[in-house]
Image 1 (cartoon, rainbow, N blue to C red):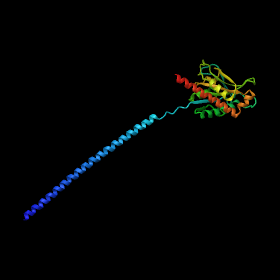
Image 2: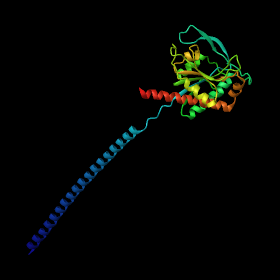
Image 3: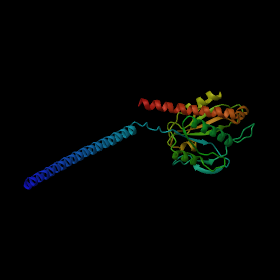
Image 4: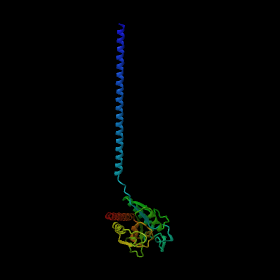
Length: 282
């Protein structure tokens, strides 16, 4: 009987052991399945992360490619003619020229107002600066005060180095006869050995249209130091005659000065419009 019980107990123990082994196998299999699932999840996450990063890189490239290019603003150089201090020393009128002229004078004077030309020139030039900036141009001023020591040659060289597209030299005129009136521009001739020609008629026509001044047209000359030393297109704007009683007073009038500035700015617009049309035809 005891033997039978021993056999039974041994059978039960063997059954329990077998069940335990099976459980261990199941647990091991479950762990392996779980590990495989985790590996798959990790791989999927890596793929998605890489894909998103790739999409962002592509999107950034597209955004960079499609960004509009910033347009380069046109720069205008303005030289308010003359100055308080006269410089009588001589300088060549152009590169390699034998002919010389005084470096710079203080200009003329109003027959009625007794105001100096260099003062009026600067007043209009500063108004012109504001007008051009308002129209989207960059402006380089040769001078913004009357107390400077700048020869005509130096002024042209400063404009050359400024990165400006054109140089506007602002002046007032004078004549022996008080009846002389009106505005004109001065430019180099087509055969000028020193500098380029500018479409100066653009400026004088728009100036006269704004102010109602007489249009005296364009005077071509190769004798002006401030023109000959310029490597960029340049014109001298003679706004009116300070020797004429009526124009002398107008040239010092703030409202009239504003019209002068607007008229010159109109000419700049017209000049660059023409240049754009020329480039489009090429």
